[in-house]
Length: 356
Ligand code: KG4
Ligand code: ZN
Image (cartoon, rainbow, N blue to C red; front, side, top):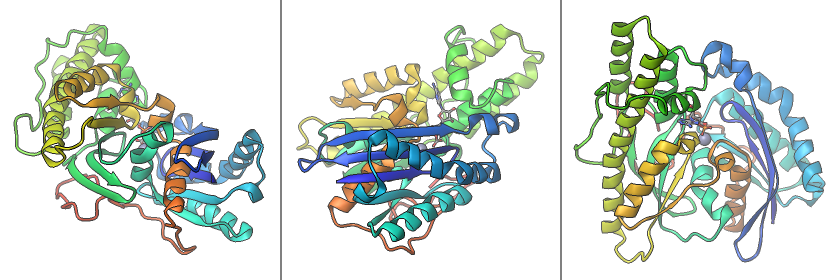
């Protein structure tokens, strides 16, 4: 089964072709991502209207290029998958409407994909991985721990009660005058800094449950920046290092709890697996933290390569393949959804900026 995937939920316009073989294994035939980072950089973050317009002007050509790269015609595709949510509604409408038009014109089944499900199922595109497994999703918009029990079956055991982790990296970078997106910049500068000079808070550390919070950390950094101004390059490096150390320490605690919870629920899983996905998974310091937490609890750590951890359309096509293989096609009036929690039963946490 060969699926065309389309991703337009945030600031990447992407198209991909992925094949799912009869034995359940996957193969990427083409995977093209056009980043809009340059369009948004002057504003220090993603501007929804600019994103939607850029998707609309590039998507059709990108689909054409992906088909050409895979050596396929649209008629040879078995289904069309597009991200239908969660995300910025303008961009979602561009991608989903394009997918519907192609599905209607070519009489192909449509898969309206939850972007978070696409991240969650990515490791199954890369190799054999049985359900259940644990997913830590850390990106600019999301910070969640989900138990992945099957296609369409998720249980959220942790989420952020305020900012997403990538957002915390980006806001820290902005406070320090570093360009957007800030995560990679903070990581590079942190390597030269002293992680012990500042003792930033470890939000929720030691508390019950597996939720996350990062806004207190951001406030502490803002106060430090205001106290020190003007900042020297050593100050900036030390703040970056202190911030990363606080994040690593918090993650060690919160994630450790999630791993224990999974083990209690699934004592029969012989080799439990922790999957980490999302743009922040590219951070090497945090990756070492995840490795040690996983190893200590007897988990194998699986981090897809960076280009499949960040937003892309291969993951959307693959989620479409998994769903269509189970007969889960969507009607042509499937809605785009700005909010779309993976686990509809999870309690919606109240508070400013709560992420689904
Ligand atoms: O998954 P992603 O590409 O897009 C979505 O948000 O969906 O994630 C982007 C986020 C940004 O907040 C960016 O600053 C962060 O991932 N990021 C990093 C690193 N690379 C990207 N954060 C920390 N360290 C990095 N090396
Ligand atoms: Zn994403």
